[in-house]
Image 1 (tube, one colour):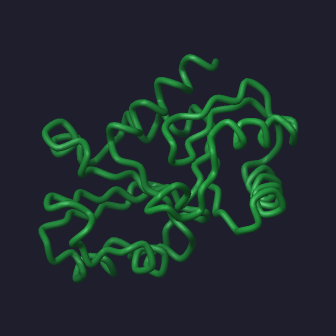
Image 2 (cartoon, rainbow, N blue to C red):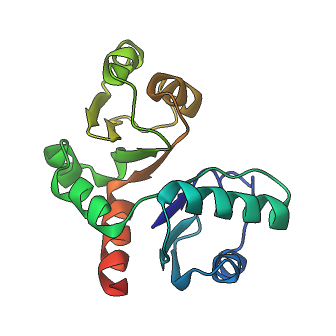
Length: 177
């Protein structure tokens, strides 16, 4: 699965999902399915995640004229994130405020400790393996944990999805296998 960062949010980086699906098919991905309007793609392809990320990022820039960060994981890895969510209690009660952040590179050691002092609105930050989980009890809009702050702390671009979307992506991955 591929997650695109920052598309169709606040009127920026507009990409219709139909065109996104067609673009993915044009680079050889099969079984392409998109979810929501925020750049969640499930597909079948071969190659390393890094190779596929580079290929789709180049195709997106060529087709739409602006850079888009893409993070790719295989379905087995994504399911492991869901199975091992460290914020399960919060996700059960407040799923739209628990976010899974996938990063281009594994988060730097100490990323949670770097973000902790910025968690001024009761946020909980957990690094679990190669992903970051954040609970935003008061919502993301008022948090000091901005995308730029998160990127700097983890050491590479990150893109987040709330727990509800994570479960929908997992379901879509299951139906594609």
